Amino acid sequence: MAHSLEERCTPLKLEYDSCFNSWFEGYLEPAVSVSASSENRAKYSREKAEEYERKCGKIWASYRDCVQKAVEDKGLDGLLEQARTENPLKEPPRMS
Amino acid sequence: MHYFSQSFSYDHSWVHVIIGMWHKYPNPHCSHVVTVDVIDRSVDPSTGVIRTERVLGCKQRSPAWIVKLFGGSEDAFVREISFVDPSTQTATISSVNLSLSQFATCHEKILYSPTPDGRTAFHQTAEIQARMMMWRTAADKFENWLAMRFEQNAHLGKVGFADVLRQLWEDAKDKSPAGTPA
Image: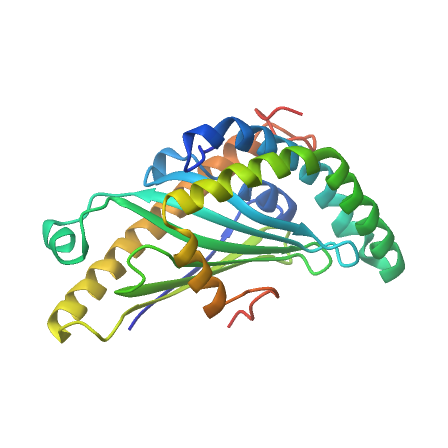
């Protein structure tokens, strides 16, 4: 896995990435096949979102704090804010 | 304005390609991408859609005239937002450059969707545009250079990701990708 933009954050990043990846690898295939009914989907999604929070929430919080500080230190926070204002992308984009 | 697009298919299921997405870097074919950070991520508890915002750090040598005109840093950063929707088997990735964005923007969109025969279609578009504050000739030259660089990187990305998917899934017939800790 690639390094963090801030070397200090790399150990946290690697730990977070492996946590997310192992959760995601268990999540995706059942998430595709559960789509039969929307109730099942909602139940599965809720359970899995909670599981992700339980398993990776803590390491995510540490990594996020580290990388947020690094983003500011590198002067990227303003550029990021501008990009978010121009295009928040809270919803999936339409593909032509 | 320069417009770029390409479409092709990966010989892997949609699930395998999307799992592979998070393993694309570091990649010897794409050595210009040196850092990858998740800065925001949410798992929607009702739809199951995963939204991820990342910052990618790139290092690539630029021609002398670019450095002179726009400043001397080899470090460039990109903002990338992806949505993975398992219910529709759709994954989209949108990227825009953060660095040099006062001079030019490169908006890239990628879509991964399943094909009827169990493979995964990849569709990529990019729009590259210099901002108008520059002399026309400089703007044109800069835009041409960016477009050429984008096309080179797009090709490397294709080759590089195909390698990653092959290594992850070839000979690994069970669900867990090879070579990653369980």
